[in-house]
Length: 216
Image 1 (cartoon, one colour):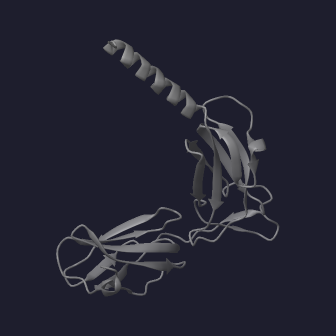
Image 2 (spheres, helix red, strand yellow; image 1 turned 90 degrees about the horizontal axis):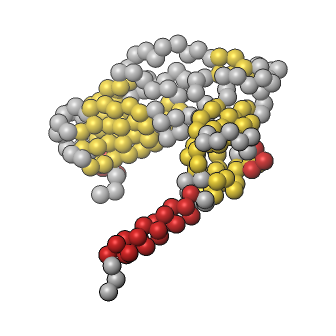
Image 3 (tube, helix red, strand yellow; image 1 turned 60 degrees about the vertical axis):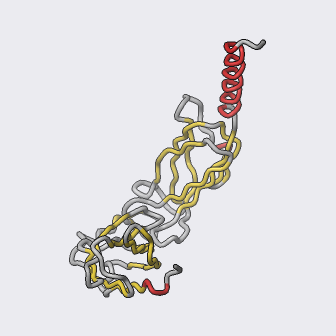
């Protein structure tokens, strides 16, 4: 006869062993830096440290924007443009948790800046976003539970607006420049989607979305 307490004890030991095995694993990080339109930007990794310890820089594990053989844990990183003399506002900082054998992260610099001929950064101010944009959804059955999600997959900027019963919609604060995915939702289902690109300043042309071509 096997005692219940003994069975539980063995199970607990196995769980502990498995946890220690997972904790001792290693993974890799692949970083990609793009602008709001998805175009690659010339960035290099200048610092990588483990947030859970005071160990020295781990850049020896990295080559360009790929790092390998990193123990599972949380890491702090700093990226800088390779074509800038003294990187400042263009630097990208953040944290990433390595808990899988392969980790991927897409990064986009915050704010708008330009480069002078000598490689010095300069801030570009487009001013406040003014005006509004309008559009129309074709082929949608009118109801009061329809809306649009507009998201930039690179910057994660998200805009949501309601669709009126006549199929019209208004974006009161125009989006920043970049590539966006527009998703039409009605009664909890995705009934249409398309990719749209805005320029600086944001386009004011009416947006036309045809949901009749969306797969059913």
